[in-house]
Image (tube, rainbow, N blue to C red; front, side, top):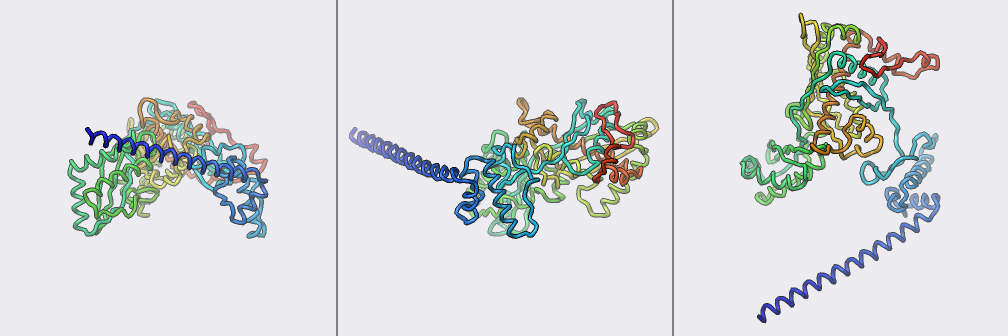
Length: 484
């Protein structure tokens, strides 16, 4: 009883000490926060010129302006003035940043999320192609670009495909990848780790740790390749409606910790070992896929090819073989068996808040054309894209303009009932739009209209020329001018 009494007293003392430490710590933190607030208020009370001088003499760091001032727009404005003054010192003909807008923008969605050292934003024209019939659903496609003809051409492809019955699509695979680079003490030890991972019971242990890091991350597989004593482990995971790079990276860190318990000599050289592969051309993405692997297909009637596209199925098929297949093979292309898939991918990515740099792997595409229908007079076209990386949450998808473009597609945010459904449909839209763009550009090339149309629509025009400009219909009936 005496022992229990002493033990209880000791426990109470520990609790009291813990409480006192916690209370002291909170008081200290509160005092520190108050000091910081007073310092920030003192800075915010200064004039813009005084703050600029503090930045210029190094007393205040330009990247801390948002935090110090509390007024995000004012912080951006002051940073612009600092830059303008700096440019005047280094450039003889330095111009003010007047034409780079910065006002009337919600920087709360940017600060700490999308960009740093912000000095404004670049408005990019957004147009629409379609509507196009995708899996029996009419879809209008927003595209952000500065390349004349691109939207008009994609629109023409949408028109031809919709008037022929629309597009059917299927998602073959879905999984984002991250491949850490692990170094072992020897190639022998590396092989031992590789074999250990491949045992089912060990894989389940790794998967449990990986999946514990997110409600949506679900490990699908680990593909391990070895070079000397280096291991490249390609983790593949479901990521619901997120593109998922951060989600997978978080899971990988946890999984590697589990491996380290059994292999203490394991050295993580890099969370990404370029075997993923992210934002770089690679055969593994082309063969194994990354993100969404999508196929779209359609049958375009010969009458539509003639009337809308101004060419023939035979001419299209002949050109597709010799340009997209043979030409790309002659160039040693990986995943480049298409005319301009990256054009459409990038325009949709910019409009909808995706990572534009991921157009590198997302544009992997092979376009196939075959004769079909009665007497093989119609055109069968398919577009296979094994590595479309998209999300409807995260990244730039929460920015108001980009979110509005997602609204146009009906895929803003996470799907309320089926996680992953919105991102999946966005990938179908991307593939469908690429097929429309391919069909139209290939037709223009086959008919010899490409240079003519670019001269008409892809250069600055005089007022006289603008009066004669075309209008682009947005109906399935198709009032697009014949020359589009």
